[in-house]
Length: 103
Image 1: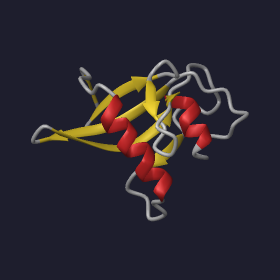
Image 2 (image 1 turned 90 degrees about the vertical axis):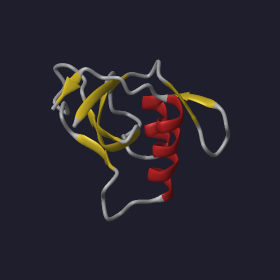
Image 3 (image 1 turned 90 degrees about the horizontal axis):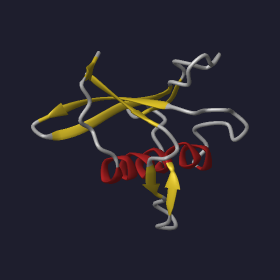
Image 4 (image 1 turned 180 degrees about the vertical axis):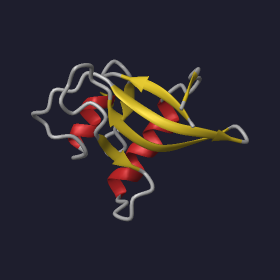
């Protein structure tokens, strides 16, 4: 497993509107993060198999936050929804995964 860090400067494609939106803002719009919560950095845990990226979950990596480490999205969850699918698709299309961080 590897880890990649993202902030709101990382732009994703809103799958409903085709507009660009910040990573954290998109997660808030999809309901994965409370709109009032202060989040400055997210961590994505993933693995690479045969040149394919498989994202497992996304968590709060905001330094000195009481929520640091909290998992916001688990892509293996039983309650997987269309919002999970929209976020996952946008992440794979827009994010660079070349981390040197191994877990």
